[in-house]
Image 1: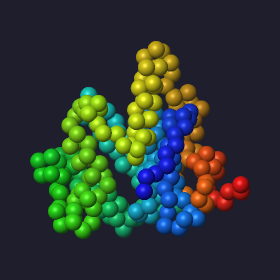
Image 2: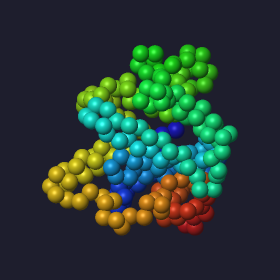
Image 3: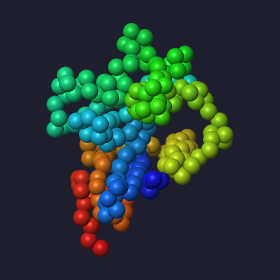
Image 4: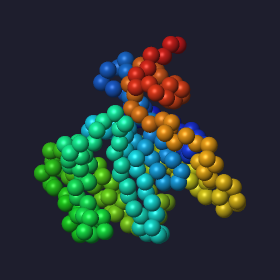
Length: 219
């Protein structure tokens, strides 16, 4: 189903919220996913014991960047079993330290696409999220003409984020200080989570209760 989307400018950057219907008509699922200036996100995770993923897309030059994944949870010990689960589930074991930390999956080998997996597990045929991210990024080429894109309703947050970044760049070129660099932002308090709520709950309701993983909203 098409998600509901919401954005709000924050001192750290932009807060984004996705909302979905669930199999239970009395409940909805919301996903709070902040973008932190200049190239970071914190994503709520649900596939392993670690509840959050910190991402960074750090530019090297106009056509290359480093992609970082950091899985963390203050209440979960990152033991050997959990690390192995993370590496396999997200495809981190495809990264080759001997090749300047590039992925073993690349355009030359179709990112290790598996046709049987494509028939039975996921549409990409590529094991799993991080490896899929690399494949999607590389398949676009180093510089993309965005005017040729077919932006859909599901991509509205992408469009909003691009406008936000362009606005921020213009303000910086005019001598204004970028967000989050004044020393006043408490980064550990930035909200990121998945939350189950009663149907009819709004994104504003969810953001008004930053520590809640379930909500009961009185109307």
